[in-house]
Length: 461
Image (tube, rainbow, N blue to C red):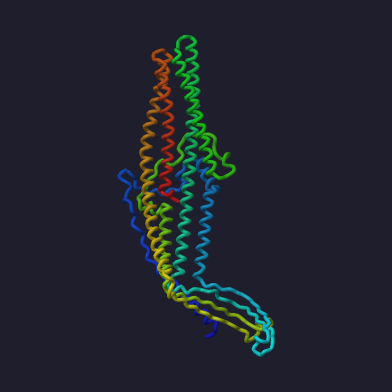
């Protein structure tokens, strides 16, 4: 058998043996949650994309800017690239390498070291191909390490999807907070103008002797209350604006955020949660936890394989000569083939400790996986409860605000007509303002809760 044929046959034999694995057969743990959300939860699928979930074009534009520029998300995506490169490095160990090289050596031997007792200068030159040390993966050690690296990469990729969903939710909630503060500010400005008008009327009536000092002080108190509320809403609006600028992550963020707060819904109003089993398949953090569990399962296979013999191959094929000019002449062919067998006999319990460590890490990964499912289930249940109750609360507060507005109109007419006292008119003003503010807040909270539900369901990425 010629030497090249022998080398190719050895490599083919190595590849044929590789692939056996001592890793335990993976079985997904049972989900430690109920089979349904409850009697009131809809069971339709909730596979949404954020472009469909966000109905406000301005908010959709801002989310797109954030996904392109947010620094935290960019760092997460770079972590994915790092994990991908690490997997590719580990995967390369499963395939034999091949190097081309050339070397030369020239040395002088003194007479007492020379075989003929005469000092001499010896030269050697070599050109050829070499096989770096390659492990025959008879027991799947390299395969298990490669599988572990792959699962770690997939877990990091899922973490990137989770970060994208979180960013979409954070931008949406920051924008809802900003527009809610703007709506409260607009309401407070209108209320302040109305109360200043009423105060001017009371001041005029007092000058004519038709209003008391108490009426004057109460009207003045409402004006100052509106001014204080105006400053509070200004502060909340600026803080929400700053949070939105940070999330967008671009120098043009200030100009990108719209100044006004047009009426209308920002996000989809009805989201069906589907079933808990669908949540497990859809939510990225749960999928990431399962990939990490699979990686720990593969680590057990690598730890088990360490108990068995390890065979590695190295070799080379090329030409050698004492003169550089003779490298490619007939008869200059050279080769070497060096298999190496290593059998662990005594390691002070290192391999057994590594196996125990791998098994404990798998148990911890199982606990983390089950915990991520339970956390996800609670977040969805909380978001469902919030959206359900806030929907009814908003309807009630809207009816209350409408009633307060009608009461305010009647109270003002009766006061100006001299039928009722100024006190009743003041109470109507206070109630109308408070109820209008509560309506804006509950409407904002309901849409924020819908964003929470969208995030809890995995965003449909």
